[in-house]
Amino acid sequence: MTIKWEPHHARGSQTRVHETSCCGAYEWCAEGGQYFVLRHVAGRWEETGRGVYAAARQVWDHLLARHPQRCRRGKLLA
Ligand SMILES: [Zn+2]
Image (tube, rainbow, N blue to C red; front, side, top):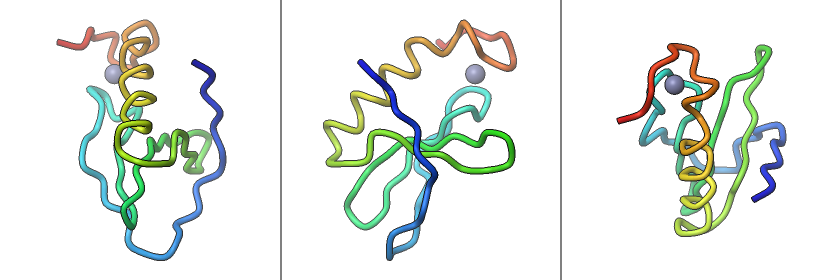
């Protein structure tokens, strides 16, 4: 899976964060019926995987599966 991060621009409705990864590296968000993953890098927000729930959720799961190697806390996901 290729993960492409793009600058996050809120589109219309309010962005809601529903879940945050172990150390806050990624956030699972919903915005007006679309879902995506947010990350905060170098002072700005980037998003990836924007789309319907199932497609975006695959991106989220992929990121979290690879995340323990680079976790800021060095803590493995349960
Ligand atoms: Zn982490």
